[in-house]
Image 1 (cartoon, rainbow, N blue to C red):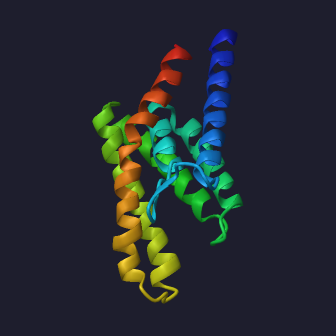
Image 2 (cartoon, helix red, strand yellow):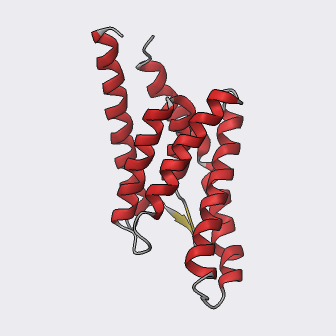
Image 3 (cartoon, rainbow, N blue to C red):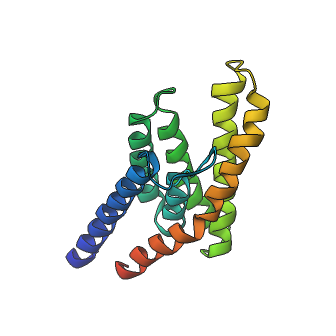
Length: 172
């Protein structure tokens, strides 16, 4: 790899980390457009999955871990839950794209919907169902299911953003 290519790759990683940080701020700041009614946008999930679609396994895994650590810093639940989830999303999405699917918007939307559904179900199961919170079943239908839908809608935005960065800073 040429020295110029290493610089472009490093700049791309730093730029993606900066995008993750900005989206983290938007997702977790009150007064921002990060929810509709009781349903929340989980912006970091489609962002990490779209990074996995466009980047290598190593880069997407580390950036997923970075996003998860940021999210865990403001989370009141089990420390490490978001780190593990987003690390897995980044790694698995990159592996799936390398082995099975093409990089396109349809794949991004489907993978983001499935990833968000998995996250919401796991979160609901571990933090509401197993802890025997009253109304856990209705909470899934009223809060988490709409969150899956509205988060999946944001996938094209993140796909085009990450693809733009990838194309502008492409290395051979």
